[in-house]
Amino acid sequence: MNRNTLLTAIGLIFIGIIVGVVGITGLQMTDKVSAQQSAERVVALGNPTYTPKESMQMMKAINQAFIDVASVAKPAVVSINVEASARSLSDKPEGEGDAPDDMFHFFFRQQPRGNFPMRGSGSGVIITSDGYIITNHHVINPATNNGIIKVVLDDKREFRAKLVGSDPLTDIAVIKIEAKDLPVMPFGDSDNVQIGEWVLAIGNPFQLTSTVTAGIVSAIGRGNLRVIEGSYSVENFIQTDAAINPGNSGGALVNIEGKLIGINTAIATRSGGYQGYGFAVPINLAKSVAEDSSSLVKSCAVTSAYKFKALMQPQQKP
Image (tube, rainbow, N blue to C red; front, side, top):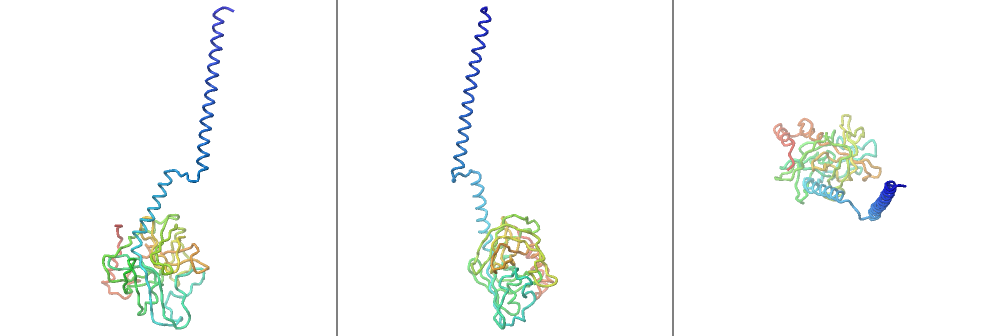
């Protein structure tokens, strides 16, 4: 073997040794990195307090949104108590009869038989700063014949209210108190409500004033429930799983922007209490009824009807 051939062979052997060492070192480093990453994953999965920073920030933002909506909307929801003189069950006015299906209930619509003093309780929503309040027909129904309507604000002030008008076919009514500079609930657009969006129900269940519950919109356009009596009744409810109970009638269903999208009206229940199925009259329908002087403002002068319609125009959120 000549000198050149020997040098070439030695060079090839040396290169082979270097390549082998580098390859082994690389594999060892890769194994170490993989092992470290696996260990980090195990630590992360095994540590129950581990929470990504971004997720925590998102949860805090959602939590604050609920707090902000409740603080803005709650002052515009009132408690309503109604008293009327004694009368017989057979004298009940239109819209106050028992529902064909016992599963669906207005709140406080059951009354004892015989002669009795009529009483009702519920909630309402302030829609103008000078005291117009929207609620359910069945809440104020006992007071339609010279009854007494008492309103308690969120700040505990009490007022006597007068009935502006009421429509049993949509279960919407408007009452008025003499006050100024009241907190107002801004209107949303119920036509844009989406299934799955967050909502708050605000009212006075079981006399627990200013109660706020949360849920989602479960369905829209819910009809054929036969909740509202009458051949020409209009049922186009927003369904929600936000907790609604007796005393919530006439209260607010509010979206995450703090805008009024519905008037809480009824529940589907076998027990008489909340079972996850609440129904609200869409605010667009309620506004339409309130603005229609022929169906709502039954006893007011024409000038009062036009004034009320002007007051019901959409309001901007403060």
